[in-house]
Amino acid sequence: MKTALTIAGSDSSGGAGIQADIKTMAANGVYAMSAITALTAQNTTGVSDIMEVTPKFLGEQIDSVFTDIRPGAVKIGMVASAQLISKIAEKLKEYDAKNVVVDPVMVATSGAKLISDDAIETLKTELMPLADLLTPNIPEAEVLADMKIGSEAEMEAAAGIISRKYGCDVLCKGGHKVSDASDLLCTDSQRIWFRGERIDNPNTHGTGCTLSSAIASNLAKGFSMEKSIERAKAYITGALSARLDLGQGSGPMDHTFDIKSAFTEEAAE
Image 1 (cartoon, helix red, strand yellow):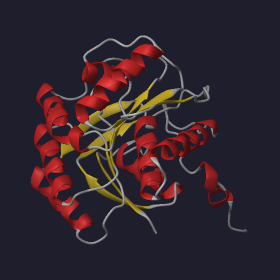
Image 2 (image 1 turned 180 degrees about the vertical axis):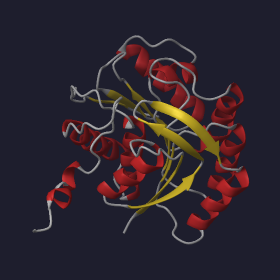
Image 3 (image 1 turned 60 degrees about the horizontal axis):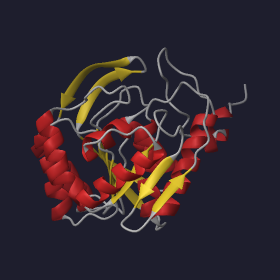
């Protein structure tokens, strides 16, 4: 069986973070492992508290995984402190990790900054150059490219700047600001658009985590970058189309939409 590691924070409501990553990896046919960067108390309406692990403990989690069941791909989600980012970069280099997908969670779709300036700088200087793929949303791409993005042409320009700067592929996620459900893959030689289906579903908690984990899963299975993204977008479209409706806020997707029979069977009376 192919394997993948997620390095991210825990979401107690199960819709994003480690929990979404593990569900996604399992649904995409790989064995999922985790290194937790922080515990959060959160639900569909927001985050009420965060407790980070120490850099030493994070390093020990990553050691435990790589020295026993080596992952075929690594997905990295939100990491809030510079010290933890540095530890992840150190361990990725130590173990020569392959198929590294970094979801550079820095800025919310609303434009609100999610991590400190020093953490952003460490992310840019230490972790992003180790990535095979970066998956920024539009606000994050604006930070990384140092430009405003208001059109598909500007998405292409920004993705090119980011790809050249960090020496990796870039999947710029269009979101609702520029291209609705369409994303752009920029490599050193290509610009490939993935035209997505707009799903009218307000429950989108964890979409970024889910997409990057699905891409990492398919890379671990040996698919090309382009095919991995294509398969990941098809998976997230299915998860949104299932229209799961849980919680009082922006709820989670149905990560198990393709294995529903296991959840609909009931024991005979």
